[in-house]
Each structure stands twice: as C-alpha cells, then as structure tokens.
Length: 443
Image (cartoon, rainbow, N blue to C red; front, side, top):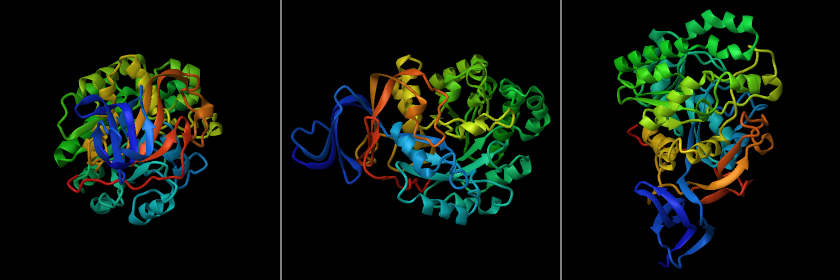
C-alpha cells in the first residue's frame, strides 16, 4: 500500500471490535484511515508498537478539574495534562465549580477559558438545580455538553437536588442521560453527628452508611422509571445497591471507580487517613468483592476516576473538616491494568469499561473503538512494564495520589489524540491539542 498517512502505528496488538489483532494502523486527517498491513506506506510520524497493546483512547467520564473557582487545587490545563500522562484521551468534567455551571453564560465562559489549554479532548456537564429546571433541556444540547449532573446528596460544592418533587421535575426535562451522585441528603444530615463525635476519618463509612446509598438509589430508580429517563448511577459503592440494580431497566447504567475496586476499609483509613476519604466512602472488602462480581457479570457499564483533587494542607484538616475526594485521572489506566494482569478482568473488558462503553452510553461521536472513520485516539500500553506509582509522577496541582508507593504491572507508554502524539514515554509532547467532544444528535 503506497498511501501516505499523518501517523502510522506499526506492529502493535490492537484491541478492535473483532478481537486483539496484530496490525498496522494508519491515521489521516485525525481519523483512522486504514487497519492492516500497511507495507511500505509512508507516514509523517511512525510509531513502532511491537510488543505493545494499542487500545482505543481511554475516556474518563467523571473528573473534577476545579476550574473555575478552585484553580489552586487543579485547573483545566493541569488536569488534562495529568490525563494525557496517564493515557487518557478524553474526559467529562463536572459542574460543581464556582460559579456553578448551571446556565449558558457560565457554561460558555468555561469553554472560552478552556480553549488552547486542553491536553486531551473534553466535554462539560451542566448541573441541575431547582432554579434551572426549565432550562435543562436546552442546556444539555449545548455543544460539548455531555449531559446533566445531579447531586442527590451533598458532596463538594453547592449543587444539590435532594427532594423528590424537584428531582422528578429535573428528570422530566430533556432526554440525555443524567449522571447522579446517589446519597440520601436527609440521612446525611441526620447522621452527621457520628462524624463530629468520632473526629476520626474511620467513621466516614459509618456516617455515610450503606443505607444512605441504598435509600437514595431506590428513590432514584423509582423516579427514573416514572419519568422514563436514562440515568447513570455514579461511583457505586455497596453490595446492596448492586442487588437492587440487578433488576434494573435498560435505561439505567452504572459506574464504578478504581478506588472502590482497589482500596478497602479499615486499611485505607489506617494507612491514608483523610487522604483515603471520598464520597461515597471506601467501604469494607465485602463491598469491593461485590463490585468485582458486578464488573465481570456485566452489571457495571463503565469506569470513572472521580478525580477530585484537594491540596495536602486541606486534607490534613481534622475530620470531618477534611474535604472528600482523591486525584485519579492519571492513575486510572495503570491501576486497572494491574488488575488486568492479576486476572480480575480481561483487557477486552477494560476497553469496554473505558472506551466503547462510555461511547455507547453517552452517544459520543467518533470515539470508543479502533475502526475506520473513528477518531485516531489511542492509549498504547505495555502490559509487561513494572512501575511504581509515586507522588512525584503526579501532574495534578494537588501533588499526591492515594496509590503512592504502589507497585503495578502495566503502564501507559504513548497517548495519541486524533492522530497527534500528546504523550510519549512519560513526557508531554508539543502543545495542547484538546478540543470539544462531539455527541450524536439522537442522544
């Protein structure tokens, strides 16, 4: 074949819709133009991926990059740099900013500030409130919007829809999939004294207990059924919720995080203190075991890092004043590849959870698979590479990771965004190339 390409990836093991195939891949004009033996074809850039696996570009559908309003912790530039260094090609950023992303002006301003600074592609959520219910159907159709985010329980920021009447109104507006933080706000308030009296982060899963999650998710499923609305339950954390969700309608989807699949109480709090604090909490190993069963049963639809950085000084505040959240976008790929190597899930299942699954759920145009016509997004990994995750590797402005010192097998080697190499062997390449993600009109 004598065609010329902007990029040729040679001799890699590509994870395609028809299986793992040793092949060349040619990218032209930002999209995959050819898959197969490209022979003597010329490429402006050529990557030799012999011994490496070429995955569809990883999509992290839950990050909190803190801009606007929290740039001391993270901004869109540092957050997407961390994503690219970790092998992530695209992110969905949350709206609990300051100001909140709940109207057209705030949403447009966020995009204006993002231009020219994104290392990977991005989409932004709009947040649901009682005040913007009637605008949600219009807001969710703004260019680059991935959908509506609902907080049923308070976490970081002031976004909250905690009563059934308002939640029903929100679900009745628009058609895109709503992503929901599902914890029961009334129960959180009733039980906050547990956290205050304990004064120790080990009480976090007792305060925000299993019933807090179960009660909220039951309410959500009932209201979603009545509204006939597609709903995405974020960062699922309890075995009991999974039991409820096994009988879900096909309009309901479920996310798990690497943290809930990797860490467990009480060890996480003994080792990390408040640096292991997130919402919903890391729970004991019984719940982690149930999550892994759900991953391999197909009940979990996608993985999201819930990247939610806070500064070290903030995390060192006495509990419960210590904020909840951990960085995670840069560690999603190596942590989960380590699980692949431990045979807790297959590489193909990892790809479904981080690429084709998100594209299918949210109607992402042009991403999620290695096939002709799709964006030339690739996460190229060495499944045999042994590395140690360290705080010094983390590009996030917060400067730490809950996995500091963790030895892993499997590592991102190169990140390719629409045919442009943006990370190679641990370093960012060129200038930020990130752009607004596109969505199918029917979603």
